[in-house]
Image (cartoon, rainbow, N blue to C red; front, side, top):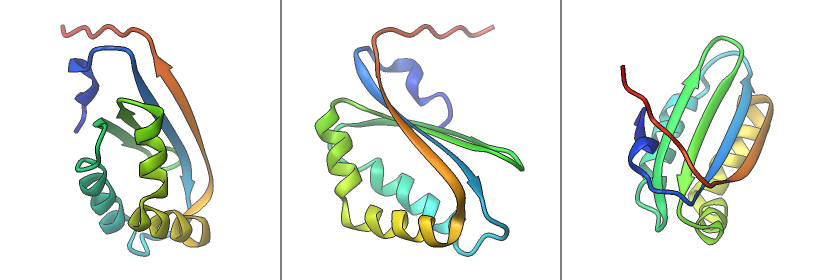
Length: 108
């Protein structure tokens, strides 16, 4: 859902997940799509934006509260994906949780 954040009124939270992948798909794309679908059904989910090139992937999910982020982190299906990511899909990754106080969107 590219552009999902442009209609959200601050304040809200952003989880910025940055990663470098291992070689080969190994089921990654299917799981990634399942996680976006599952996250979109979670209480407090506001949207997601994602981009990837050959070197770096960035996914930003938007949430209404820190409690919603914690619940998503602890979701059992998400935990399975996290474990598989650590074992098979990622060379490295990081995540940052940020409070968005304001934003602007410009369309040309």
